[in-house]
Amino acid sequence: MRGKIQGAFLCLLALVSLGWASPACGASGKITACVSLTDTDGQVVYGDWVRVFLVTAAIEIPRLDLTGAETGVARTARINSAHTAFFIRFREMLDRDGYLSDDKLTRPDGTVAFNQVIPGRYYLVVTFPTMIAGQKAAWQVPVDAVAGQTAHIDLNAANMALKP
Image 1 (cartoon, rainbow, N blue to C red):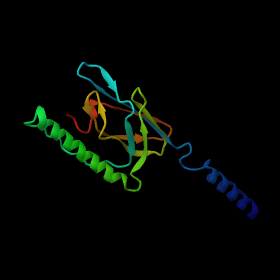
Image 2: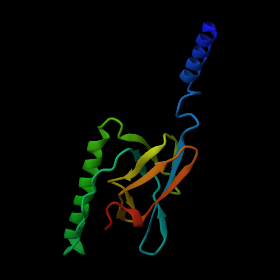
Image 3: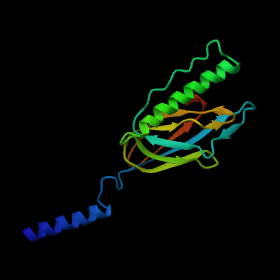
Image 4: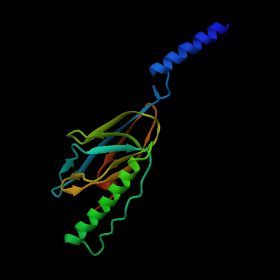
């Protein structure tokens, strides 16, 4: 009897070492996204070659106050300042263990896919220096990965982190 238990244990150990019996195997989800903005002519412009980060925690988004700076240099300076602050906070978090889950570049049609994501709450982050349709673009959108399912998020003007 003892030999059978040892043999079963060794077999299980071999399967785990090969990744066949690991918790992530068969228990992962998928996250897809499409990055786009609409230009001044009403045309959808897809974010091609945009780096999308899959991270495990939200960061504080700076407040973008354009009151009294509707046009010109003051408006541009405030937008630049908010994007820079968001980028700096993001870069500081990248150095923390466990923050970055994965990152990918979008395809020409603005799509990206994260496969075999361990179930849980994540955030899709896009930050400086991303430009789409002549606009600076930044996102931090929550998404839940569920085992055996695909979660899809559209990153667009409605859910931008910093709306000009």
